[in-house]
Image 1 (cartoon, one colour):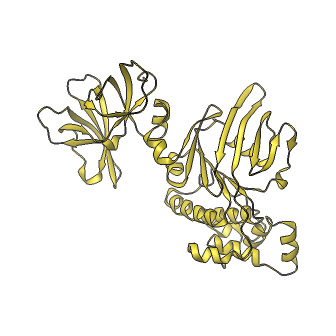
Image 2 (cartoon, one colour; image 1 turned 30 degrees about the vertical axis):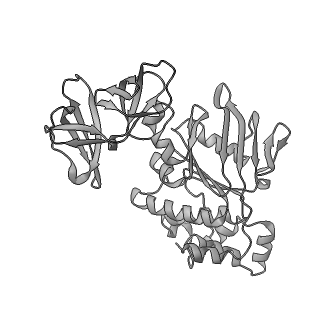
Image 3 (cartoon, helix red, strand yellow; image 1 turned 90 degrees about the horizontal axis):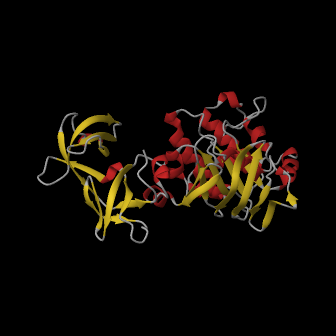
Length: 372
């Protein structure tokens, strides 16, 4: 991939003005199945927003409605000051200024790389190319790190290279918005992180607003400026990745975003009393509330040699990942309560070892009772 400076200098033509995507009250059903339920979403101009949700929650339907491939029942979709869809407006896909990168690239196998990219050009750009002006295609190939590969065919490229060709094609007409529909799903795990990074760098250089649809929590949290979590056809929480991971709305969301330790707590002025002792807390509580579910992340739970007066447990299971490890600890004196902790890989205790547990930082007070 070219450096940011080189990629920027390669784009001789003016960048499209970045535009904010605004979706309000969007609803869609297929027969008796309600897929979207009054969904609201904002994607900041020039940023990368991820829509994260489990399979079947309506992510791809949302993307297709924004692209104009399907029609909503009610709601509005606007890109900057331009309305793409409302009760009186239904712009055709080619008039929306939206580029789409599909799950597996969807390249034309009989066309070489340059022709695949050229297929996405505007009419004026295609006319210039027919007259021998191939600069826009070459600029795009340089932007996505594929200079010199224009004569190859898709079957001669790796999966990651194919996805970068698909991105170049989507960027060819200088869209104000690029939609990415789980574009890294088909890649080998060893390639995924590298291709993600390269694609995101190219997107940021393009100047377009980007909306990534994914079910992969790591992907969303590591790449996006803002993550909007979708559940049952609606956005339940939208925030920057750190805020979302640290302060999820409820227990279900906490578990969806990663490993979570949920404990029953008795609330007091100084925090909450739990099976792990007295914890400092954050988050809203109702007036007069005496009990709550509190959340910790496993990396907040530190294991030490047994210490007098500290909560103790016995290590029941471990999972080693190299850079880090998780281990499950059965709390002594708390029948059936198992705590998940995470530590650097070289600090993993042995199964059967007795340890003391202490908590770093604060616990989040969640709404609702302790889930099963």
